[in-house]
Image (cartoon, rainbow, N blue to C red):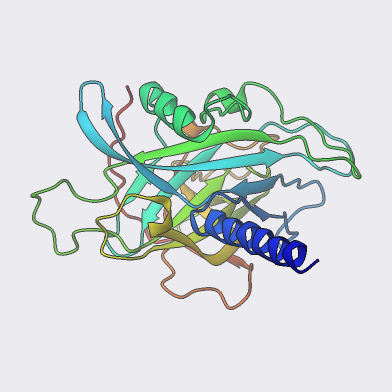
Length: 289
């Protein structure tokens, strides 16, 4: 009996240790539920979003040599109580809060292949990129059933300066990821010159990097707990026309370029809603394979 009790204790401790290790390595996804905001219209819908802490991998990009790749796995599910069908057209940006740079999600097939081999070798998740995930609507999940999740990956390059580059800040320790396309929510602001600016409902996730910055294992990057639903200003869609038609679906990538919002302070609550002008910064040109 004593031996059985001891064995049970050891096994229980081992399982607990394994679970803790898995969480430390960022293998456990974190779910962000939609939240209604003051600025939502009656017909606004928002998808559920789950993600793993961003990771780093070194891969060769054709025509660009070896690159340090940052990526984030995520899952999207449609739990609309009305059962309406929605399409996710992602626009995902990584914004460094210490280096003040903006990085747009890139489509890199060779890198995607390496990530799939690393994260999903048996093809269980069927990971898609930001283009293929928008080819079909997100399946509707019933209220009491297990959510029908669709997996995706966002990829960024040149988040840190290249080795040997002189920079006041040689690496980023604080950054935010902005996920647009999860909702059809939008707001409009009229400026003094008559220009109207459109803001989209966007999810902001805040992260930090720990350690000396030389490690590339997942445990070096962690979510701070900051998840904020904001209405984020867009550029290239201002107009002086008297009327602005409401878009039925989220704006496509070629229609907008988002400006980053910099907030050095962590939110006091798990999530909040903010509508405010966003300072503009030049976005680096993204190259595709």
